[in-house]
Image (cartoon, rainbow, N blue to C red; front, side, top):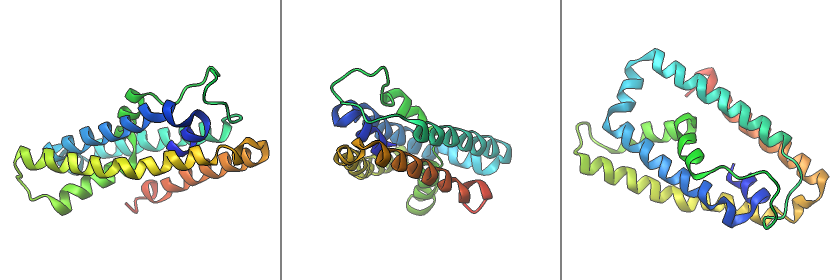
Length: 177
């Protein structure tokens, strides 16, 4: 998503999206550390609802990426906007990869009954590590802009990104994760 945002909106306009992911991931990690992960593990209905909402939203995002139009000049107003800071924060709650990382982080690296300081430190550490990783996606998108100015290249790119996003759901929906 950040790659597509970088292509379509440029670096500056995509920064709220990037920061929203990092902050949203911190909040999700902290909530999982403080017990939300255990609630989902113990409640099959809650887990099924989360899994279903995540799948539906990612299918919608795939469609939106596939149907996105031509690359716009980041300095011109097109009526379209990148994902907002708040939207990116909220997206983490239906992002299956974020949930898997959060639950894995606490089940693998943090002892049960850890103090609130350990939970907040772990959440902050994972969020800080996340930031340069997602920054690479944004930078790659900005770098691809010239290549994707060609409508044929852009259409192939959008369809490929949408398909890859859909394929990322396969293991999640089939129960492999």
